[in-house]
Length: 327
Ligand SMILES: NCc1[nH]cc(CCC(=O)O)c1CC(=O)O
Image 1 (cartoon, rainbow, N blue to C red):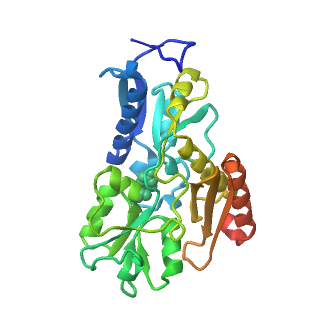
Image 2: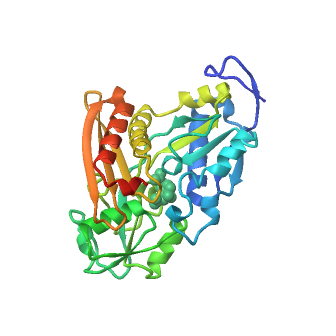
Image 3: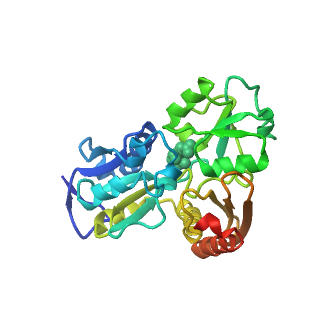
């Protein structure tokens, strides 16, 4: 079946389009949500055989017993997916933007960013704790409580606010981490609200934390779609369904991340939001994993200058942080 659409007048492609995705429940949910959006926009694709889903196993999925920071981090969830795109095994791929490195490999472009789900992290107290006070969520944690997370970004911010806490490693997909919490491996954990919501797993008692208190990861809550750079047909189709607000905020956050150029051992946070009047507000964070150093700054600029704002804030944070964080 040929694909004919106003966004793709020049060529005609044969269906099905092959979409690459990780196989986790969250990745599959995001991929199917994306396919729903594209078929709503482009009714010619509303055909059961228009898309073929290819589930790909990445190194990030295979290695479950170590911190991402200790196994070479950056791009761990995307490498095999990029290879599948470049080999032509898939035509496009759906990613959690926060797991996608800032610099795409040659031949691959980020063609589309979708509307952001809530970008905040939330605190999930386990069964041993009473309910959280939303105005002061961390107060629910008793002196010396154990929090499960394998994110150095969450760890550093928690320990900076509460040096008495201790952190144990929690890895695995969202469901695995919720099971560890239920089994008492830690008193509480922290997860991205976006993932919990999408999976319908937002537990009673979980409390979102203000993004300027617990700065989320760059791109958190946003789904991004990559294609081969020379596939102008798909590139144009995807560009037509992208969310401009998600593109603006993620451009600022990803420019910040790129300018900081930390290893994935360096706790880095970045969160932008649009303000009235075409302006954008960006908070950036750099810290030491143990929380003994933490630098957080917020700047504003015109939305059109999102990339410059991110790059400048990133460079300023880097300049004012201890050099060993970037070694
Ligand atoms: N690193 C794993 C990951 N990648 C994306 C999400 C959640 C969805 C999102 O942030 O878009 C999660 C889980 C989490 O951090 O709790």
